[in-house]
Picture (spheres, rainbow over the protein chains, first blue to last red):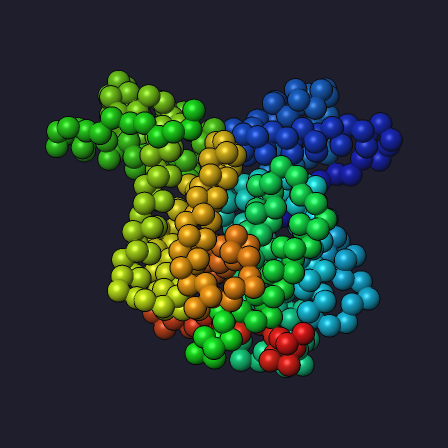
Amino acid sequence: MTTLQYRAPKTKCGEKSFQKIIEAGRTLFAQNGFHATSINLIIEKANIAAGTFYIYFDNKLMLYLYLLNEYKINIRNASREAVKGLTNRYDIERAGIKAWLIYVFGNPLAYKIIWESLFVDQKIFMNYYQDFSDSYVHQLKKFVPSEVNPDLDLETMSFVLMGISNFVGLQVLFKDQITDQEIDFIVDQVMAMLSQGIFNKTTATK
Amino acid sequence: MTTLQYRAPKTKCGEKSFQKIIEAGRTLFAQNGFHATSINLIIEKANIAAGTFYIYFDNKLMLYLYLLNEYKINIRNASREAVKGLTNRYDIERAGIKAWLIYVFGNPLAYKIIWESLFVDQKIFMNYYQDFSDSYVHQLKKFVPSEVNPDLDLETMSFVLMGISNFVGLQVLFKDQITDQEIDFIVDQVMAMLSQGIFNKTTATK
């Protein structure tokens, strides 16, 4: 059973307890992982009454799925916001990668929560990235053959693009601080590679 | 303290116990994560006497670092073996990616052990990929400008290439089975993207 279910708070006070649980879960899952985090630890960290957890979530898995889904929604929203009004794929790709880099730098726990799904239930991890891949393919298809090379396999392209974003995201996260200019430099480099590949023109015709 | 230290077995019987510990650690770390795995659980799973663990490892972290280092060495060896005798970067890149895909399909726990480092100690995770990046840059440099476009930043390129390998690796892992032809298809697609980018020629000149 890996479908998210929770009961949303109905009062202002309930909202406060709910948020305390979310933040305690985020911190503990990111620090020690899912299996080493008990509901009791979450209750203690959130500083709430023991029964309060169960008002909103049936179990620890549902809290984890809530967090994962929250990241998924926030990541998609950041990307959607960034590409608003853009009409060609080059500009969309550029704005999407830049928005992602800014997002991960501001939300360094995102990787931990998302990749922890490998340990919670590998199916959750697979669904997470397969969904992203499917939606990427759906979006890319609109630009074939007008902008995107029709000889290329879109599923592979979606994993290539997700891989680039995720690892260039790590490159950014590994730095203590980063300027807007440095982010732009990385984004421009990625776009140059996506436009012309990494080889010299003479090699690229191989 | 994140430097690997262990005492190698000196007898055939010791080698057997040592391997039992390694395999128990691999299974438990991959299943439940580092923090939810105790030395007692490892001892129980390995079916060894309680003191035997400490003959080889001072603590759980050293066993984890042993496993991580083993993957690092095996991954580098698989790649080194695959590119032996190749002299141009295109062929080296192609053979390296193919060897990696075959490796991950045969060693599906590799991702779990490597990415678990995020939870063991984020510094270990950073060092792991920063080391790979540094070594990638060192290798790529030899082909600039002869084959690799000198306008591109090699650090960013190394993260782009690691990202592609890792996520195309996931694409392969998500399949229940895969043929040689299917692996070749994915590798060819990746090489086409690395050669010409993902856009049409007209867009690529942008």
